[in-house]
Image 1 (cartoon, rainbow, N blue to C red):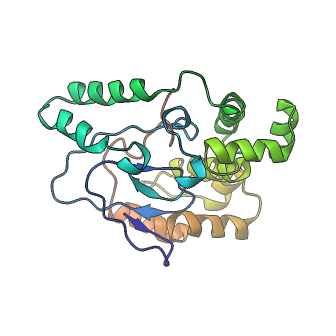
Image 2 (image 1 turned 90 degrees about the vertical axis):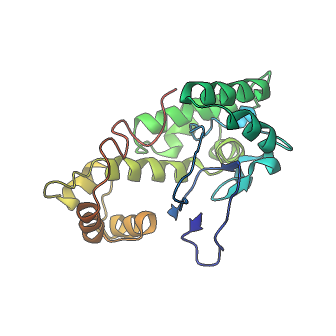
Length: 230
């Protein structure tokens, strides 16, 4: 896994791993043949399954044993003899059910509620509106998001907003970038250009050229957005 942050060395992962929410681009390189079984959580979804503050996983790839001690080898041994995806997912689900907290961690309900509002609005709701609607201070809301998501609601909104934009790009036809940016909540062209470069490493024109030269397989990126269903 290669981080776009120059000071961060590449991470070689052999076995299971956890990653938190990423706030910048990264690249995952796989060997020629790899069998991978995993779970894609909502930004706050991992909280009931791990005894780790979410900020410890943000922008990081962490070996599974650092989060679930002595679990990686046992899970891998169970998966090794299985052939069907259904059986594989059953093993993963059993592990998750065994580790699910009996009671929801404190503050998770607040994060789920406000997080879903951010997701539905594609990050366009001001954080002040969210905290007022929830009846809490902005600082309290930010603290709960850091604990369960790993970042503030403002930064999470930034990710949702860009995700909406990038998933709206149809590389097969002409793209009106100013119009698309405006529809996705960017009202400053310079700000939009900086956000685009931060998230993709390319200018909008360069990104479109790359998409056309290396078209993605059908169905990727996912048509229903960057986050999984409930």
